[in-house]
Amino acid sequence: MIISEIYTEGAVQIFGRSKGKVVRKYRCTSGQKKGRIVAKPTTCSAPIRVSSRIAIKKAKARRSPLIKIKSRYTKRMSPTSRRLTRLNTSRLKPTRRKTSKRKRMK
Image (cartoon, rainbow, N blue to C red; front, side, top):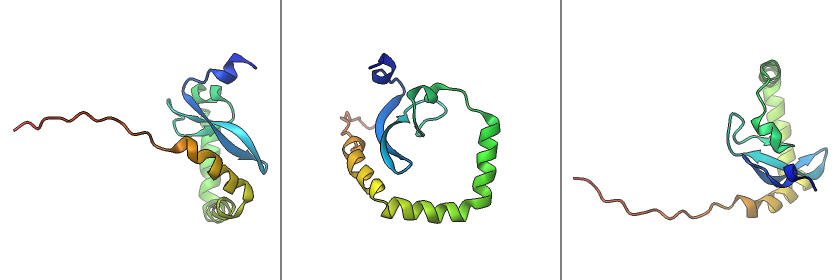
């Protein structure tokens, strides 16, 4: 096992799907790619490629309705997606934060 596999600063390990199979992925917790799910934790700190970002925006604008329909169906019906929701729910439970009681200023 490589140290970079264990030490993931700025990323949280989750399960995702790739080509119909359950695989290990990472959710970026900081930086420009915060919230994005990526294959490697090093991607979270990598610079954004502007050309590919523009190309993806154009493709989404052209095929948006079709993408929405297909992704909704897959997320709802695919056995892999159902398995993923069960695997990731334990990881996504919100933690209770202790809030100190603040005195109101009058």
